[in-house]
Amino acid sequence: MEITIKIGIRSSARRRIYRHIVVRISKKIQQSHAAASGRVSAGNGGMVGR
Image (cartoon, rainbow, N blue to C red; front, side, top):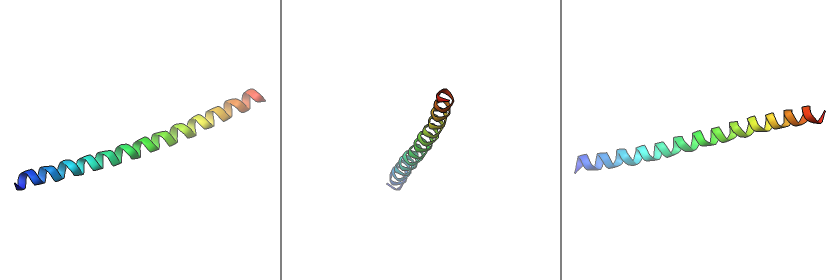
């Protein structure tokens, strides 16, 4: 019983941690991509406009 309980707790903890990490990484990637695309588009637009 103790082993199964420990495994269950570990698996649940791992899933929570994994999800948390994935969300953090995805948010960081989205922010970095948005910032990079925004900068690039703004720079290109300014250059082309001028």
